[in-house]
Image (cartoon, rainbow, N blue to C red; front, side, top):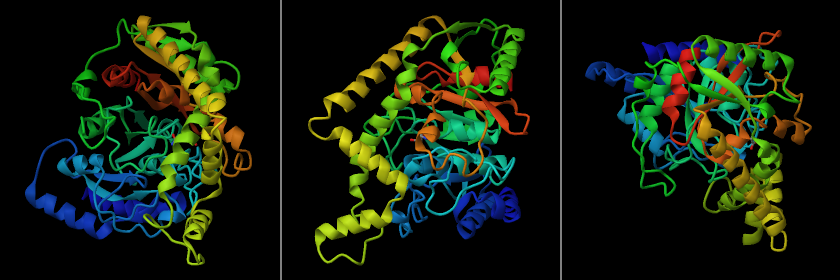
Length: 448
Ligand code: GLN
């Protein structure tokens, strides 16, 4: 019934929301029928789920919203997260739109179409996991998976009024996630409620030999953590997160949220993350450098669409890349290649790495005295489709409050905390210590 309801809802709204790139209706219905016969009682049993299209699904088209992978219809294996979900008997409804290769903050960089914000379709759903957020917000699926390199789970969660968690780097296996910036990428859960989010995270975490950066840590019971209150919880609020560039409406919502925490017995104080102002610059250097290396594999030989105009090998590479990649992806590859080129390495890449360490140290210092860091997820609510598309730098600034978290490798959640005067959701961001997702969930659940 859940799977039927999911497809019925998709038929009703997806012409407008445009969240799905590929649907897997026949297989999903067959799987649901089989599950009905088997029966089962884990919390994820039979739940319809949507998967971001940069997560590889065996036999199900995986494009990363790029023309380059338009013909990648039959991947040979499942990402680790996908096999883990199959073990829990969720049902994959289809693959969700995104910014091409996860580069973007609005979904406007998809090579196919722009997903819309279900609250108001004139507005963007955020990005790059915009459709993962929109599909949950519009009721097309209960759960979805997104990926977050610089904010791509939390920013769309904030814009669409859903709950999205970027786990600690290393907690969730990246095996089968098409790499954008390998030292920053994490897959994470997107849901309507914090409790659902905890269930979905529980299903996808764990050490994986197939990912050399996967951490071998003890996994707590996340839903148990929800039962505790927040009395005595020590909250840090970075002054940089409520300062210039943050809209009045967003600031007011966050202050109201802090008042709720006070009433619940938590305390908060203002702190500083002084190096966070270097985060966006460092991030675009580092992530583009890694992207330029990761995307070298798209050469028209091993993966994806091959140019038919080429008459020699070099032209196969050249024309396939010219025709296969979109503008933003090319911009990143050029920036990254330049930053890594000999003679510039020290001036750019190395300096950005140093800034990254300083940013991480800022977080470590705050976490000596506090349990969580709280602030807005984004400086403003969702913007209109087309509003920032001509100006990459303004677009990049959208992630100013989420990027430091990826650079530090710590976990962060976004959950709804109010609405703007235009009726668009506002997101509250809660950041935790390394591998302390349990405290984030406890704090988020208490507020919800
Ligand atoms: N918007 C950021 C970028 O374009 C973050 C993307 C992401 O987290 N995947 O790189």
